[in-house]
Length: 351
Image (cartoon, rainbow, N blue to C red; front, top):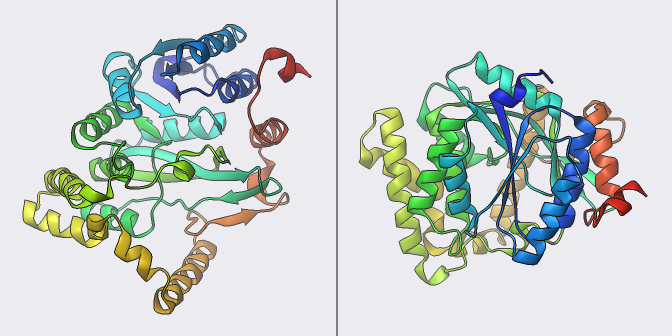
């Protein structure tokens, strides 16, 4: 990457009580030598914090800034964005994921010449260490419409997270502020998740670029595997109304529409969450719903085949797939397969 990348982009790594995964990621970053600023945001317990600091000390060639904040995910990310991120662009990477440097740079350069886009990324790939290391390309596509409503509806109808995209720093800073002020991930993680992605969509267009962008590991510690979408189901209606109010206001401000119209659009996309998604979960078990779901899947497969810049349906990647020929991806995959639970210490990494 270019020598001045550290002045343009900050790579942010949030971590909590997972020093082995953090060390594995630092090992990968040292191999890549991309030159970007690296900001590690830690909320680990004292003993595991010391292990994180020891891991960082083992990689002196990396441009690492370290900060420990004893706070939840949303609050600590908001604080970091407001106080520590000075570059015009930033990108998040989970401590158990890998980002491909060339794709990150391509996304950054696209944003620099495309002021109407809020974020950009490429193909996200998931590796299932518990299923013979199978790899899957995850749904992703561009949202190029000039209409915030159309972008909002499209994303709601075929969901993917923009969280790990390369962002304009002010856009993502504001998204964290809104999510922190108007949601509680301890009671319902789904609402801040929706807010973070949909705010990027309402504030600008989203670009999907060709090529593998990141490799993520599916394991039993993934948040989606251990944390329910809505844990406080007793107050699901209250939580939904809080989300509806802020999302409607943001959508109305972005589009110039009335607040009532924006609210009706939010309801049409996410109203099923009023009861915590219980009624929809019951419908998913019915034959008509399953038939409609399969029809949608076949349609998405067809559209993915017809449009080279869209991956609308999760699909398995073979080793012969053109996406898998990227050298950084091959290094990332080897490291993830070799150390599926992370790297405990420098000795094990060198073995």
